[in-house]
Image 1 (tube, rainbow, N blue to C red):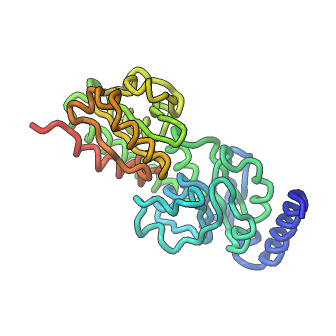
Image 2: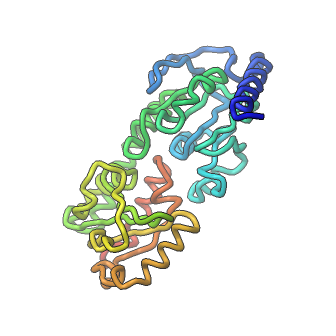
Image 3: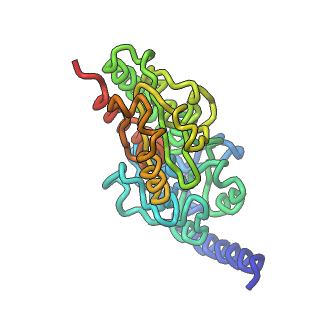
Length: 308
């Protein structure tokens, strides 16, 4: 069957599941609704959604932080399961494909009454998703995690709870910063090893917002609104800082990390020679996006504060 034929067959199958489920708890669910404004317009969402499907890691973190266990969620990729930092909170959730390729049939079969994602990942399939159930999209990912969390709170009817969680997070971030004396005088570098090179994460990333909220300074290369700056092995010295946290993405990233960390340029970094370069969880510090991840990063940061 041609690619076009397979796509048409998948769409027909999804429509069949949607029509079959109209009398259930899915897109045709009865009950009071409220209008939610989002990146794709406005959606009429049940006041108290019971069957939520999430299609990105940030949305999964957000709904779990609000005490809602979704009926379905995507995996980050074909190999990776739910982010390990979520622990038992993520157990028992039905997988519905990957972030790159959500399984529309599996989503429809769950008869959701709300689908959460963002236009960065899934703008092209918004029409199909919104046929299955009311669908709410954030406009972006990473740096905008607080706005995305507020949007999830609005869609779930838990705005007050979301604001309380964010206020508590902000207070915690300030307290963590004070553990380092004057955090504005501490440059923190974030390095991630990938299969195709090295990324230095900037102010426009999720981890960048946490460091800013705690009051830390950043190395010159990281003072950018970009999510990250790609550097070659010969440029790794630009990633130096008073503190340096690093991780590898997947097996290929870990292999790259092992190779570069054994090389002379890495060994010359000031953070390395001072014992101030620390491996961290890629799942949490880089893949994690949302209040649960942010708070766990804040829990870990004081371990690296100078001791009196």
